[in-house]
Amino acid sequence: MISVNKIGSDHVGANRNNQDYFYISDDHKVKVIMDGCGSGDFSEIGPRMFNLALREKEHINVENFEETVKEFFSKLKEAMEIIYKDVNNVLYNISTFTILAVFEEDDEYIVLTCGDGYIITQDKDGLVLFNETKEVIEDDGEEYPKYFIYNYVDKEKLKLYKEDVSFTEHIYSKDKYVNVGVATDGLRFWRKLNHSDGERFIELLKKGKKGPMSRYIGKCNEKYSEENGQAKKQVPIFQDDISIVF
Image (cartoon, rainbow, N blue to C red; front, side, top):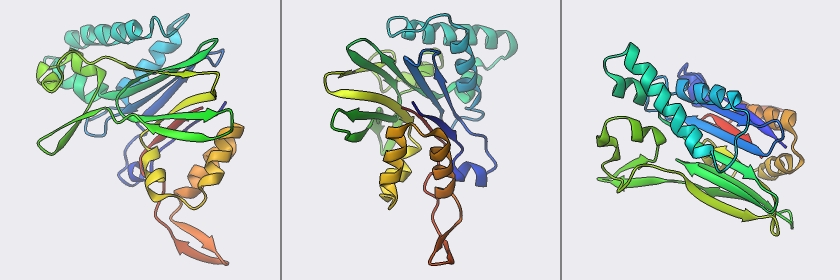
C-alpha cells in the first residue's frame, strides 16, 4: 500500500499551508483523504481535526462512517458556538473540505465520496484507471462543489441541492479489481499535462513505493530539470496539494 501527502508548488509560492490530510486504519482496510477548499480561509484546520477525530475511534466501517462524519461536524459546531458569534462563517472557513473514503470488504471495495477528487482502480490485468469524482453543480457559469459542511452552515450554501449533502457510494467487485484507492484533486494537473514520465508514476502506484513516489512528485515540482546535461526550466506538475492512498 502507498500513502503520500505533498504540498503543491502553488501553495509553496503563495506561502500557504498544505490543506490535504489522510487517514489509514491499522489493518489498512479503511483509507480516507480530506482536501481543504482553497477558497476557505484556514481550510486545512477542519481536515486536520477530522483526521484526529478518526484516530480516536475504535472501529470505523462503511456502515458507521457517515454517522461518524455527522457526529464530528455537530460537535464542532457546538464547540464553535461557545467561542464565536459568527459560527457559520467560522465553520465555512475552517471546514470546507472534501472527503473520499475506501472500505475494503471481503468481496468488494466500497468508496464513499463527498466532493471532488479521484478514485484509482487497478484491475486483475494490471490496468490502472483514474476516475474523477467531480461532484459539482454548475450555475451561472460558476462551479459549486459538494461539501458536507453545507449541512451545518447558512442554508444558502444548499440552495442548489434538492436535499442535504450526503455521500455518493461506488462499489468495485474483487472479481475484477485487485486494488482501489483515492487521491485528492491535485492529481488533475498531472493528468492534464499528460506528463511524459507518467508510466513511472503508475509503476510506483502498483508497487506501493512510498519513498520513490514522494521523490518523484518532488522532482516533478522542481523549477528546472536536466536534459542532455543542461538545466531546462519546467512547469511544475503537481501545482495543487496532492494526497494519495492506494
